[in-house]
Image: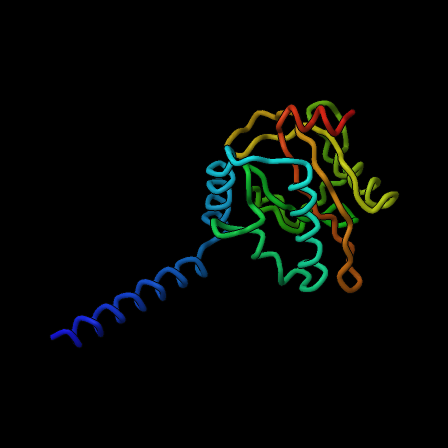
Length: 185
């Protein structure tokens, strides 16, 4: 009897693990974006600093420099270490094409180089200029918070990374007014 319970428990655990893995693997882009957004919202009360943003961007650059586009799934979904403290990593390229946005996936593949924020700033072009000139740096602009449609002041740290012949720009930002003020000093 005890042996049957153990076998049943093992079978049940294996089934649950298999079911969860397959459900996540089969998650469509809309569900994946919703899971990414939910994690950003759920972690929004966690402490965030400029050092943490820069650390996560640097970690993302290492991963992207090793794996290229094969690393994109690591930046998305509820289990991503790159969605944290209410923010997330996104990746665009030096030509201005969004390569991976964990929440606004409909931007993927679109050229955003001429996109302007509500103040008229071509912030993707500015991000690329900063990366071309310095390798990395901070850029301020207007962008909607996760779960919102209205733009808010945001500041992002961006860094350039190469994989093969491709040049990516990895970014991560915050809406925290204290961090924005600190970076702008």
